[in-house]
Image (cartoon, rainbow, N blue to C red; front, side, top):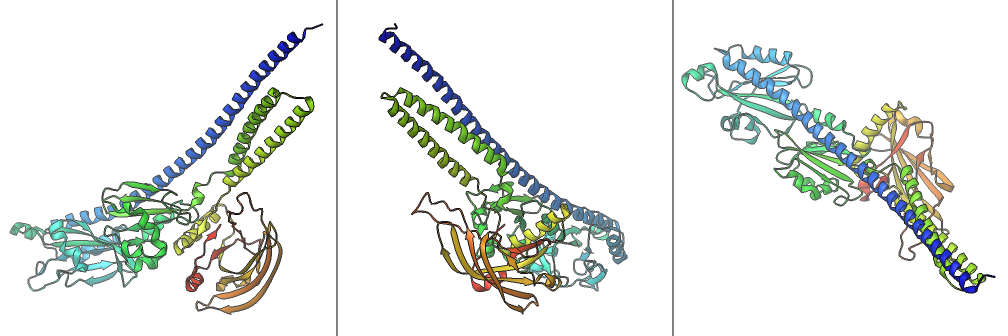
Amino acid sequence: MTPPSLTKTKESMAKTVSNKIGCILIAVCLLFFTATLYRLWQQNNKFQVEVRQKVKMQSVNAAAEIREKLILVKQSVEQFKKQVEKDPNLRSIKRDIKDELQGNENIFSLSVAFKPYAYDRYTRYYAPYMERFSGELKEYNLVDYDKPFSEFNWFNRPKTEGAIWTEPYNERENDVLMTTYSVPFLSRADREKGETFSGVIPSDISLEFLTSSLKQLDLGLGGYGMIFSEQKRLISHPIFSFVQENKSYEELSKFEEFSFTKKIESCFTTDLQYAFFNGEVMTNDEHYAACVRIPDTGWTLITRMSSDMFEVDKTPLRQGYIQAIGWLSAALVVLLLILNDSATGTVSKRNMSLSVVLFTTALLIIVIARNYSADIKGDGMSISNFAQRAAFVDNYNQLSDQIRSKTPVFVSTGLFINSIEFVNAHNVHLTGNVWQKFKKQDLALADVGVNFPLAIKENIREIYKKQDDSQNLVVGYEFDVVLRHHFDYGKYPFDNKNIHLQIEHGEVGENVMLIPDLESYEKLGKRLTLHC
């Protein structure tokens, strides 16, 4: 018969061994838990770095592309200047300008503006000017260009500064944004007389290529680019009417459309090379921004990115969180079993303690899982201004072409909520109105109606059809729907609830995309943010 003291010693040794094994298991579980979280953090950080690098590369490449386009014009004008300075009598200057324009696709206008009476002692102004912005070659003679007005900087500044790029301006006749490269020249005759200046050779370049260059940037569905001149005036933007107004940065920053520029004023510093602004600076509606200086111009390219660019793939992220929760839960279970095994008492008490341990562990797993699932929920992409909407339309068109989908139809849509009622903990009752604007070519879609795919009950009734001032057909609906949401009341009574109301066009087979009717909200004095 084994003595009681020896039995206790064996039990103590067995408990010690089991505790050591348990501690080793806890350490292993915590090690894998830490390794899993570190791997997720590393993957997310790598993704963010790659996206930022992609944005930087695109912005810098776009700036370089714009610079290259301007350099081609500069080189063409400089080459023509050499030809003019070699000409002994300059009597064929008109023919030379015409030949240069017809033979050089890089320039769209050209002139040789002589200083007063330099070409002919009886002629004050001689400046033959030819352009082909509309496709047809047109010819003019410029006058009054020696007057001390800002519109004649293209002639007056090169006399003292040498070759220059002028501040971009809107050319009224063709309604196109332009800049001028002006280079002074010295004719052969004036050189022999000891003169230092004979006139200026200017060439205008349309800046429409800026918009096409910026549209090639991949900045997310709602991202877009804009360019400010050296004097901080907007010269490229998805909404051309902003450019036409010729407003400065200071004037534009007062509008909601450009309010985010106040937060990135460092973009306009003279020593700027490249800068990136993340969500710590920008709000969710403003997303992210970057800026780069376009070499040799003093212009600033600002790219505004939508947040969907920075959203990682949710599937591996969710799988990683589940693994981390599993390892942490395993560590907690082993720890609680060790504590339970170390406790003294009867078998029934120890079984009761074990039940409490397992129940507590299950609750911890549920709480952790709910927290992690909430963290990985995406915010989508928001459209809250005209520029984001224009960028979204352009980018979605390109995406449809890439996947060879049907040509998308964009329908301006507005929403007005009349009432919201929480029926129970998860059901929400909403009533209100929806209106849609259809262009003439899209009238076939006007009779289809709208759907609320998240609704468990819905009643939609068409209440009017009419034409607006732009000859669009406006269709109005009245809706009464009940939505099902899985709200989290863990922070009650200090919580707030977001209701997601998803609307789609009734024609499922067509590539119909609903976009916010910002014009109507502007008239109402309201602000709409659409999350896609």
